[in-house]
Amino acid sequence: MTKDLKADFWHRLDDVRAGLLGASNERPVPMAPHADKDENAIWFITAKGSAADRAALDSGPAQFYVADAKSHLYATVEGTLTRSDDAAKLDEIWSAMAAAWFKDGRDDDAVQLIRMTPKDAEVWSGDGGVSFLYEIAKANMTGDTPDVGEHGHVTF
Image: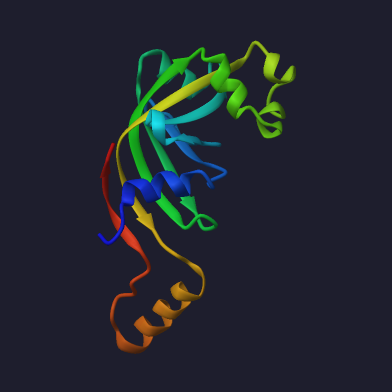
């Protein structure tokens, strides 16, 4: 690998608006991630009683799937979920998007902060744009596989 794929993952995850969070063998659901490289955490705001919340009660296993063309990040992240009552963190990541899901906004009793602690991931990271199109065209002309970015396994 020519670049630090883990650092690139965290950097690009900041631009991801949504992915699919699967927990405790329940179907994955769309969730907005909030990356925190320094804490090795991906934060989610969910409702009490949701699949993510139930999994977090038991520090359950979870998977977060990212396929984001804008950030050029594609990843399958494995880790565990835990509940958090960190009001400062919730205030830090709270947004109008989160507020739309709760009748009483930030003060709604159903609001629950969930922390995903990633353990490992398979990550694909590319540049997109003109270089992507060039690689596709070149591969079609030469029969070679296109070089569209980095791919590898990341351990957190």
